[in-house]
Every structure is written in structure tokens, then in C-alpha cells.
Length: 342
Ligand code: APR
Image 1 (cartoon, rainbow, N blue to C red):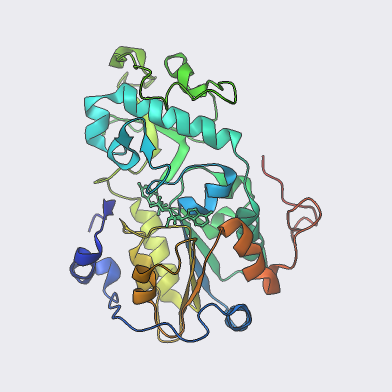
Image 2: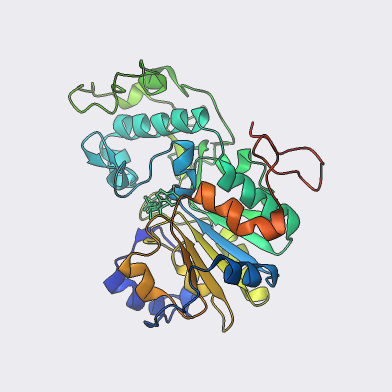
């Protein structure tokens, strides 16, 4: 079965999940959270007894690195909803606009640096072989925080991987960090003065239509190049999904960390319940963790911590990863040197 990226609404969530092979265990019924659901000591007890931990990360993990999230404040790009631009249809209609959107996100991600939340997750991976991190983020900040690739699954691809848009051409480029990627996208790499809006974000600044012939082209077949990220309606990498399934099925998952995600995009959101066993605790780390919608989905063993992932993750994971060093990063057990972003 091909698993495509799609938004899920809470009302259709159950039916879709029961329909899916990927998520046949999805059966959350409303149970009130237990009395200790925001008790740090109770969480630490669960954490230190956990051998297998799964994390599902979203845009909120990179929020304190200065990267906007998709929904809510910051979710608009010019006058368009950011999620409308991430579609094959938008690329077909106006590849120039879609490329500018991604070129701008590449530029922002290159300027950003990983935060303590990324580094805390790296340290968790280094200290706990049974930790697997699923990220919906395409900003490469986890990789730049030296998260071991074998314990990271970038479900939605990377802004820095490029591929040919021609389905019959296999041309790809990995980790291309050129900025701008192409002379036609130079506007996206512009850094205006601090008190001026970026011309790309200012809807009153009209954008000239860019003919396809001016955009980055495949050196092999001359079709348009495109970012190697998963757009709505597109399939996710089957091998990656299989590896996640196999990891989940291998043994009981003790803890699921749900970090900075609105958990409304399929199939990523389904992994929260897919990984849930009888003794699993799900912990939500999000400024909106105590919204009624989230509290309604919680079970007795679950936790919810309200706030910035960059602040909370170091505190929550401290019994395993220790305290960060003076420069704010953790000592790597493997290299005895602090992890630094590149
Ligand atoms: N720390 C933790 N969480 C935060 C922070 C923060 N500092 N700031 C915001 N958040 C939370 C928001 O409350 C929200 O729940 O992060 C979440 C971000 O949600 P979305 O913007 O929907 O991002 P995400 O869940 O990653 O979106 C999933 O949608 O468009 C697609 O492919 C795109 O990967 C993306 C997917």
C-alpha cells in the first residue's frame, strides 16, 4: 500500500486510521489524564524505566531557532497558507512561486542554528540505543545537531535534497546548501535591514511571474528540478516507513514523545497511537499541550508539559542526558567533545 501525505481532521481520524494497515491499533477513546499528568518527578520515573522511546517531532521543535511553524501564527506566506503551497498542483501551476517559497525556507534554515531541544534529543540518542526519532521537519537542524542518522527518520524529506520533477528521471542531489540555489532565486536569499520586511513576505511587493525556463533545470533531462520534500498527496519513502514499522513492532515502546507538532498530518500523526501498547506513556511537549483537544485524547499514564520544546526537553530528559555544558550543548559519549551544529 502506498502511504501518501495528507491532513487529517479530528472527526475523520478514527475512520481513516481503522482503514489503514499502518495504524490498525489506533483506538484512542476518551479517558481523562491521570492526576500526575504534569508531574516532572512522575515523568522522570517513567523515563528512567524506559528502554524504548519513540519521538515524533514537528515544526515547534525548531520554533525557538527562529523558524516559523505551519499552522497558527507564522503559517501564512505572503497571502497564501503555507500548506497550500506544499502541493504538486501548486508546483504545476506556478513553479516559480513554489521555488521561491522553498528557497526562502532554505535560506532561513541555513541561517538558523539548532537549539537545546535538538541537542537534548541528540544526547538522548547517544545515551539510549533504543531511541528512535521521527521528524516531520525538513530543516536539517536535527542532523546539524549531530543526531545519529541511524536513530533519525526525516519522514518528509529535506529542503537540502533536490530531485528531478520528471518521474522517469532519477536525478537527485543530496545536501545541496548553495544559497541561493540558483540565480533566479536570489530574492529569497536576500537579508533586508532589521526594520524592513523581507520583500518575499510583504504581499504589497508584487512578484514577477518566473517562466519555467528560468528555474533550476535537471542537468540530465532538462525538466524542472524540485525540492525533495514530500508534498500533500505524495507518497512517503516506503523503505523508511517499513523501517519505522519494524522498529515499532520489534518490542514494547515504553514512551512516545510528541514534540512541537499539531499532529494533524498523516501518516506521521498515526505513529503516536500505532506505537501505544498497554504500558506506554505518551508525553506531549507543546505550548498548547493542555488545550482541551489534547487533554481529551490523553490516557491515565500520559503526560503533558506546556512550553517551549527548547526549554522543556533538557529538563525532561535530564536524568538520562545530564545537564548541558557551558556552551549549552551536551558532551557526546562517543567523541567526548560537545556536539556543535555545522
Ligand atoms: N515548542 C514546542 N511546540 C511549539 C513551539 C515551541 N516553541 N511553538 C509552537 N509549537 C507547537 C504549536 O503549538 C503547534 O502545535 O508546534 C506545533 C506546530 O504545528 P504545525 O505548524 O502544524 O507543524 P507540524 O505539526 O510540524 O506540521 C506537520 O504539516 O504542512 C505540513 O509537511 C508539513 O511537516 C509539516 C506537517
